[in-house]
Length: 70
Image (tube, rainbow, N blue to C red; front, side):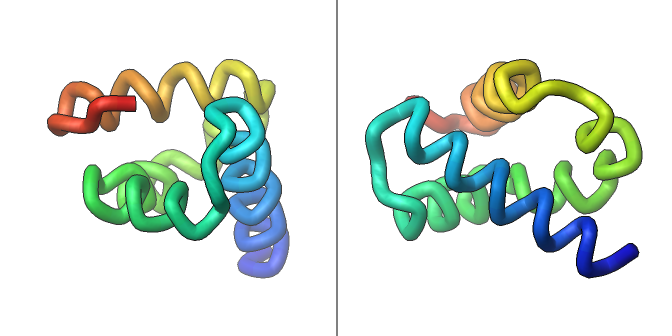
C-alpha cells in the first residue's frame, strides 16, 4: 500500500510539473510550502481514484487558497 501511494505521488508530481512547465524539484517545494503534500496524505484514498487532470486542478486550487500563485 505505501509503495502504491509513493508511486502515485511521483506520477502526480511529474504530471503537475509537465502541466505547468516547471521542474519536478520546484513542484515538490511548492507542494510542501503550501501544505498540498499534507492534503495528499490525508486524502490519498480519494485522490488516487480521480484523474490526474482533476487532481492537478484541485491541488492547484488548494495551494492558491493557502497563498500559492500557480
